Image (cartoon, rainbow, N blue to C red; front, side, top):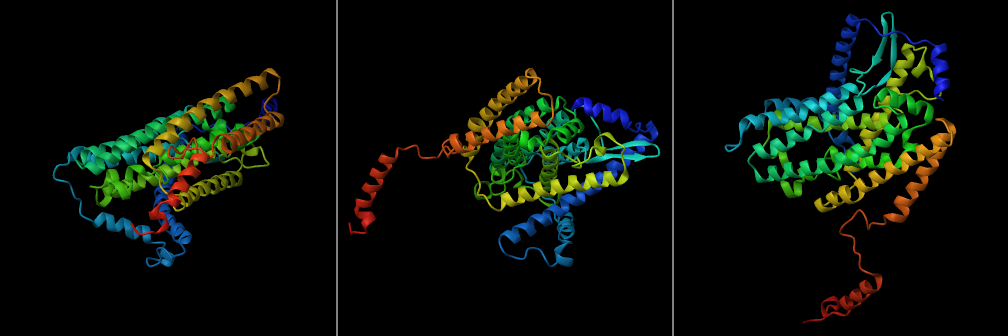
Length: 426
């Protein structure tokens, strides 16, 4: 397959990159457009969350401000700008103010290295549809996104509130637990692509099939870890209302309070975009290779951006769907899932995939249809083993009753014969 791609690239020579001046201007334009779309999209996601929850719960949702409630995010933003900025008397104000900023900035930085469309041909050269095409783009995302937890921990400590402190401690433990599993789950993707550049991962899936089929277990681990990394249900333990009031942002108000929510939704967008890129082909247009090897065109660029946005919106809907469907885990279940199930499964899966790739290479099976079919069959077998044979509630849930059936029936019989169970007077 690599030889075929090389021949196609030779037959369709790519446009050269633009000069330094055009590159700088194009980068600034992409930053302005990307930041605007990102911030407006995050604001509309708050409306989408409320509309989807209303749809799931069979009610109307926001419908008073603007047509169909479309201006509700603007009203919420205006309200937060006008609200009083409160500072607890015993809070450490420098870090109390800095914490929301530390959570907000990494969330808005990580999207810069995610490619969102096919290259755009211009009279000045080829413009790549990514703000910063770093050769270590994937590693950059892992490094920068992990900095957001510092804002949460600092917010919990600087508030001088026991509920906020507990929320911050929970968040740090949760991030450490699932950051490892999330990183481990992407190693099979890097092994298959042979590169840490996100554009190379997209091209590998264009010719070798989506990684969700070839690396199903890795996708499952990444998906679960993504919910924990973004503090979304069923893993929103750092801000558990029933236990910690509001968690790490209990003492915050006005725009500082809003920054935490903007960071949460921005992280949702980033992790969803990363999921699309790593496992669902990214912006690749199916049934054509022109978007990868040329000749490029403006309509193909627009089509690839549209495909990327459709996939992105699906995962954002999945985040909201899960939130309004599943109950919250207990904290011991959260830790048990991360350390006793996710991490060992990720390590074992790396060994299995590395061994399979080595065997396929030794057998002379190059990357292509046969290679992908064998990996897909292997992953289907692993899915059956993991979810149908091993689990059954005994691995994930530490609260699962390990009592033998005979002993359980005996206890039920004793309970049924007791005076209290029969309703007899004492």
